[in-house]
Length: 152
Image (cartoon, rainbow, N blue to C red):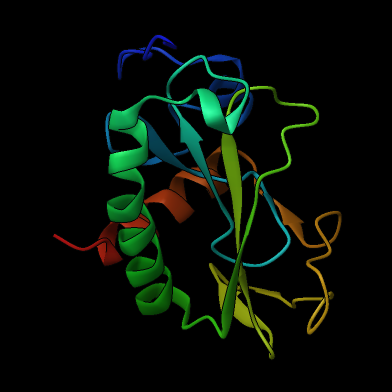
């Protein structure tokens, strides 16, 4: 069984996505992080804190916690940016630990912190290489914005 990373430490994948600066919510076996590269505003990473490198290797606890994290993500992103669709991409090609890229999708551009960001892939697959890359301050601002819309 994979070991769970304590909430005060990060596996390689979580660290690669700017933890702890990018942290929005900690669910124990999962963390929600602001994705530094924002193909659309509100793009996130939902990362398992366990050292699992295959989805089938995550613990029963991690599987059980997934629906709550997903529900909260969708509620917060709807409130914060009113997305039209949402994509969950489990790529794990460069960053090895189990994680999803969560990409809210928009038919029209959205604004955040004085900058507009259009969904250049709409209505097809998300254009992950397009959009805006956040610096540390931008990640912190996005995390705070989403936390303000997080349920409960």
